[in-house]
Structure formats: C-alpha cells, structure tokens
Image (cartoon, rainbow, N blue to C red; front, top):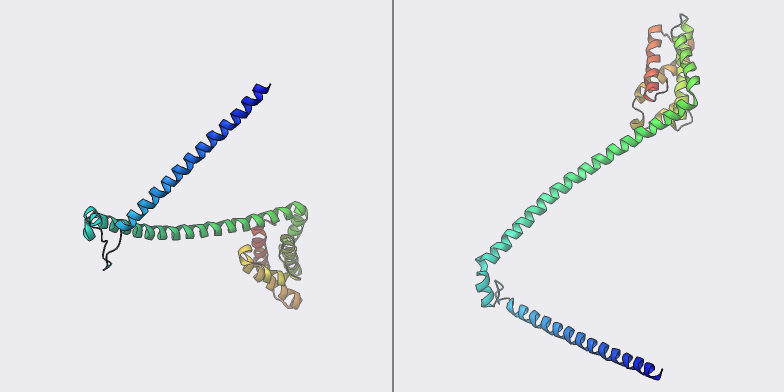
Length: 236
C-alpha cells in the first residue's frame, strides 16, 4: 500500500513537471511569434516609408518591384478603384429598384388586407342576417315596381334604411348615415359617391314629401344605385 501511495505521488510530480515544461514551451513559442511579428512590422514600415515629396515611397526595392507610379501595381489599383466605383453605382441603382419593388409589394399587401377585411365583415353580416336582408330588399323592389307613386318614394326610404344598417354592420363609424358616409375611407368604399347620390335623393324626399316630383323610372334608377352599393359589399 505504501508503494502504491508513493507511486501516485511520483506520478503527480511527473505530471506537474510535464505540465511546466509544456507551459514553458508555449511561452517560448508565443514570445518567438511576437518577436517575429514585430520584426516584420518594422520591416514593412521601413519598406513603405513615404518619400519627402509625398509622391511615392523611399524604398527603391518597392519601386523596382511595382514599376513605380505607372507600373503594374498602380494600374491594378486603378482598375480595382474603377471596378469598385462601377459596382457601387450599379448596386445603388439596384437597391433603389428593389426598394421601389418592396414599397409596391407592401402597397399590394395592404390592399389585399383591406379587401380581406371587407370580405370578412360582409361574410359576418351575411351569416347573421341573410333572410332578413333578402326580405327587406324584396319589399323595396316590390314598392319600386308598384303603380302607386307613394310606394316609389317608400322604396327609396326603405333602401336608405338598409344602407344605414349595412354600414353599421360593416363597421363604418358615425351617429347618422350622413356621418358614416363622411367618415368612410374611399379606399374601403369604392361606390361611396353612388351612395351619396342616392342618400341625397332620399333626404329630398324626406324633407319635401309629396311635393318632391318622382317618376317611376327615376325611382328605379335610384334603387339601382342602392343595389350597386349593396353588391359591392355582397349585401343583397
């Protein structure tokens, strides 16, 4: 047992010696590399030392090796500079084109999101009120096709109520239909001008009553305006 302990102690001492030797070798190699690096740096500085007039370097070996101001080295630098300048110009133009393309794609993506949002809102409305809207619209058409002039006015009044209901369900904000039409973004409401025309006729009928002259042909035209608006949102 004593021999084994002695052997272990001896092994530890040997390992320490080996480790110390390796560390010493590593320090020596590192110092040698540092010295060699400093030597090369000094030589490089001396080799490329500029001339007093600033037109070149003082080392004649460098001048002989590169051919001087008109030698192959200077020409190579010139070609490299021309290539880099041309590359920068082309890269700049290409970057501008890519930037414009990215902006266009972003705009298209926004338009698609707007259309998807509109479609989703319309689907929700259609799912919640399919039969009710159909019944209201059939009643509007029946009034418009009646031979009674009073019903022609009534058809427009009821169509305007449907327009107000549609805008509320779709999500346009405002306390009245007029305010909702004013607040509606044109990009989300392509037939807004048509809606305004029909709504103005409705206001004239509401204010003037029977004094407002309205033919059946004109009433059907106004109902057609409402129908165009409703079809944009798949409301009828």
